[in-house]
Structure formats: C-alpha cells, structure tokens
Amino acid sequence: MNHTLLKIAATVLHLPLMMGVGQSHAQRGGAGGTGGGGGCTVPASFTSRWFVGQSGNTCGGGSACTDGAKLDTNIDSISANNAVQTTDADRPVFHTAQINGQPAATYSGAQWLQFTEFLGSTTPFTMYAVINPTASVGNNAFVGSWNNNANPEWRLNTDFGQELLSAQVDSIGNGATAITGWTGVVVMYTPDTGNWTFEICSGGTCSLDNNGTHSLTFGHGIDAIGTGSGLFDAFQGKIAEVGVRSGATDDTGIGSYLHCQFNL
Image (cartoon, rainbow, N blue to C red; front, side):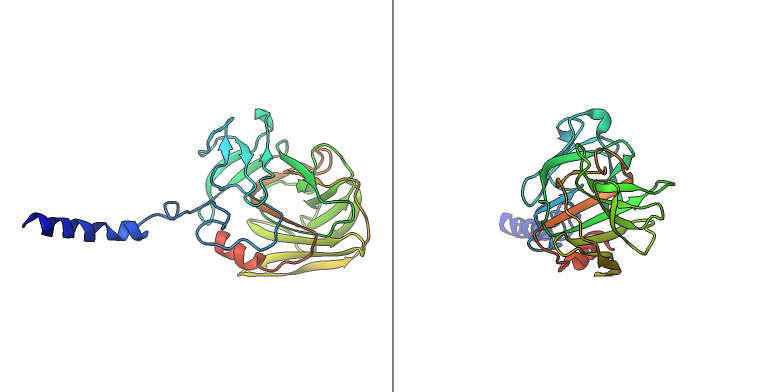
C-alpha cells in the first residue's frame, strides 16, 4: 500500500473521535459548563447555579476533585458568585457518579458552602435543588445562611416535606409530600403578596406539591448551601445542584433541564 492510501486510511479511522463519536460523556463536555453539561439547557434568566460537577470546581484546598475529597469551591456557572468553604472540617465530601452519572456533595449535619448574600427583603424568587436526604430526623436545610437567622431558609420539615421559613422559626408554608431518595424540588415565593408554591420535578415536568399565601419579609438574603439560619438545621444527605432566580417566580425550563441532567 502506498503512502497516500495509508494517510487516507488513518484519516478515516480517526474521524469518529474527531467528531465526538465513541467519546465518553465527560470527553464531550460531560458534567460542566454553563450549558449544564451533556448538552442540557439551564433554565433561562437564573441568577446563580451551583452544580457539584461543574468544570473548575476544586477540592482539598484547590486541587481537582476526586471521589472522597472535600469540596472547597463550587463555581457559580452563571454569575461567578462561587460557593466556598475555607475550613477543611466544614467542607462537604465530593462523590462521583451519584445520580445519572453525575457527582454530588455529601453533608453530614456540620458542613456548608458560603457565597455572597443576595435576595432582598421583598425580592420574589424561584429556587430549585436536587437533593437526597439521609437523616433520620427532619428539619434539614439545604439553602439558607451561615451567619444570620433573619433570612429565607428552605428545608425539609419533621415530616420530610418541603418548608420555607423566615428567621428560622416563622414558617411560610409546607409541601405535602415527604421527600425520599433523589428528588428535584422547587420553591417560588413573592414576599409582598405572600404567594408561595412548592413543586416536585419528575419526567421533565415540575408538578404542584402545595401552595398558599403567607406574607413575610426577610432581614437578610441567602448566603449558604447545606445549612439553615445561622448554621441551624444543617443538612444531612447529598446535594447535586442548586439554582436561584432572583426577581421572579417562574419555573419555566426547570423540569426539562433536571430530566436531561439528572434523569429526574
């Protein structure tokens, strides 16, 4: 076989890899990027998104994350309001392949990641989270504040239903369904009107869990993942992703994104 034919054969053999055919999910972009990873479209107009598998996240004080390492920086892929933890003992543990091949962070009731506070006292908001609670008791907060107790706190109550609180003790509303196993959950709230809604996402759709009206404002915003108000009600379980939309109550695109990203 002459040199020209050899070059043609080599080119043909390598074409699939150049095009992405035969590559792993991770090689094609996989778990990371503002596009959600694997071609999944992140819901539009969200303010922040912390995905545990985000490209660029670091563990153990700045190193690449490996299974069992402690997550120190979870990059905010939308607004760069990164969630960080400088104290080793307070860092959640990074684990690979926890849900649909994606990683998650394990919290054991004493870990949290913090970011710059946002959401004003009367700001409407939408939040989604992908969680797997493991505690035998309720009151496990997955979004809240590490340094004050006058903020929104999104947690699982003693019946493992969703609950939104103000100032740690003032309950705004509760979900109707006990959350077990990996679940995509949504909360929407408008402080001025008091309208609150909880949803559970499955099969590409986020369906009503419960809703009602109870108007409360907040003295502070949110600034932590994995804990409630002033480090109370710290989460026990696994968190794969949290997203926040400040200024609007709109669940458009959340269900389809979570189905694509996590097969929920």
